[in-house]
Image 1 (cartoon, rainbow, N blue to C red):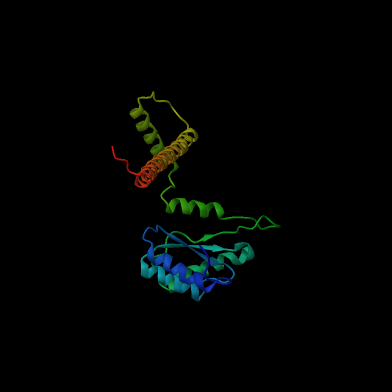
Image 2 (image 1 turned 90 degrees about the vertical axis):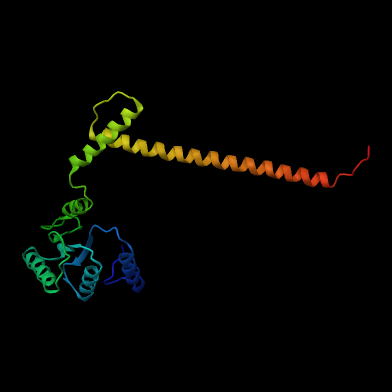
Length: 209
C-alpha cells in the first residue's frame, strides 16, 4: 500500500488507517523503516495504532545499501531499542534488513529472500511439503470421485493440475452465463413477439359472420 512518510500524500494516510481499521483478516503487517532515518514520530504513531487495533507487525528496515557495513549493525540495534522504548509488544519475528539495489562495488542486494520467506511464513506457507501434501490429497479425492486410475505426479504436475482445474471451472462458469443470457434473450424475444401480436390484433377491423 502507499507509504505515509516522506513524499506521500495526506489522503493516503487517512485511507491507510481506514483500511487497517476496517479489515479483520490480517495475519501480520510489515512495517517499513528507513535505515537512514530510523523510527520517526510517524512510525511511532503507526505502531501505537496497530497496537490499539491488536494487529501484529514485523519490522523491515529498507535502504540498508545506503549505510556503511560497519554502521548497519548499530542502526539495527537502534531500531530494536526504540521498539522496546515505545512498548511495541505486538511486534513479531526478527528485524529484517533489506537492500533492493543491484550489486555495486562491495555492496550487494540482500535480505529480499528472507523478506519473501517471512511473508510466506505469515501466510502459513512456510512448510512446502505440507502444501504439496494438501495438493496430493485434493488430486486423490478428485480422481476417486471420477473413478480414474491413480497416478504418481510430481509437485509441478500437481500444481499444473490445480491450475487446469481452476481454468476448467472458470470456462464452465462462463458457459453457464452465456446459456443464461441466451435464454433470457430468447424469452425477451418471445415476449416482444406476443406484445406485437396483441397490438396488431387491437388494430384489426372486426368482421361479422
